[in-house]
Length: 154
Image 1: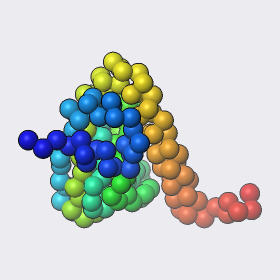
Image 2: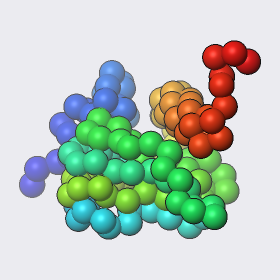
Image 3: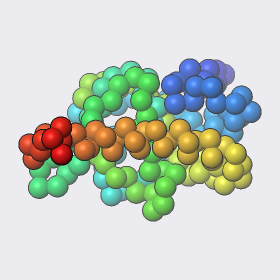
């Protein structure tokens, strides 16, 4: 039976992750496919999945008085980082814009492995911080666009 380890190793999120961690991670992983228009995760729901996008396009958005698109992600990106951060609720919603293939990691499984191996947890947290920063910047730019704010002259 083929393992997901080579796919995990090739994904940009896990690039240069020390080899010993893959033994922990691979047991939490499986393949998943989403059809265009399929909702992948919803804001406010339990964050129990973490996705590594392999192909396709996914729109990340928030639902307030209207749906506000935050970012569109593609191959090499991740989705669903809230599995690691209490209260383990998704902060955004996401939908497949086109058919999308991903590796899904069980958030509870991965969180338990991080609790047992704090070095792994710290390594993943460092990687997630760069994603947080990117998503925060995307949200900021979207708000600038929505409210027509001139950030160049502030």
